[in-house]
Length: 202
Image (cartoon, rainbow, N blue to C red; front, top):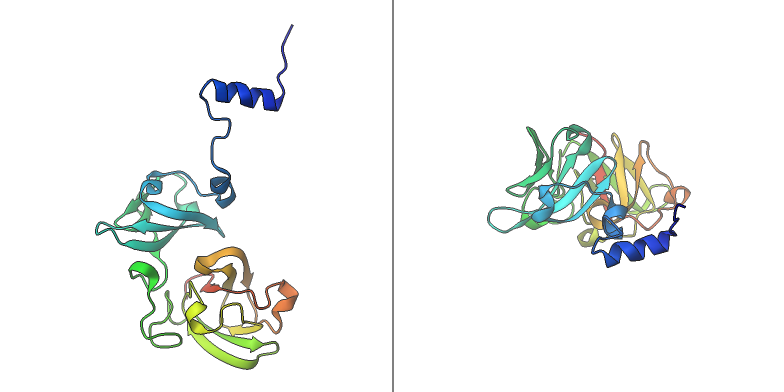
């Protein structure tokens, strides 16, 4: 006669035998970060829009914000090479301006503020219908806190496709926009955006 164990009983037996009943932590499962040797020297790993993001330590012990496209890594393990996510021959990208800690030289709106290709621009507005205080930004902006527009954007104009996220460093709820947005209420993101980046390379 076969013995059928309930899920809870099976978990108790697994723990008693010294075997973890949960293969990954709930946080790791929620973030969906793939396994790899990068986890030994990187933290805060998460996946968004098919891209892995992490804060990785370089050879001098500095933290670098980096990311890599996962569909290019299907045959390779992901690792950290001097603060940059890599897999096989594929190199990832540095986030922010590529400097340790993601600093923004020149301050909000100044030359070099944000990362990525400066040809990708976006104008953010405090009010709906492109009204109120505004600011033009270029490239990826991992954290809007120093701009005075954190959780203060109601409409946007831009070229190309942009991704807006409710938390800094492109975390939280993220939405891709392909056209100018007159009112972010429609998307449930009015006064909730904390980071912005181009969806592709320009």
